[in-house]
Length: 124
Image (tube, rainbow, N blue to C red; front, side):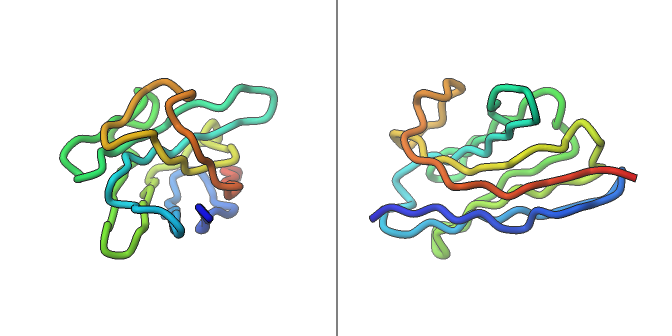
């Protein structure tokens, strides 16, 4: 059974940092691109970052470029999202998702399995 479990969220002040982790099990992790999505209150889920299966290409939405870094460790079946210089507008439920193949897509419907998410709250 496929499973994605996120961790690392929390409450942080503006300018702070968090590192999210997503541990995968029950799947051939190294065959799939992975994405991090976030859903802010009252808004639709949006792709924040994505990474190809072999770690050769990444994507970031404009609002997080230069602040967030996505990485993966295929030996540990884990994908990470390093978040620096956090802003109140980064407050959301962050979920990782497995793409349908080795190359990431910007289309949410291309991600076939999602974790439950970890809450990130940025406030002073």
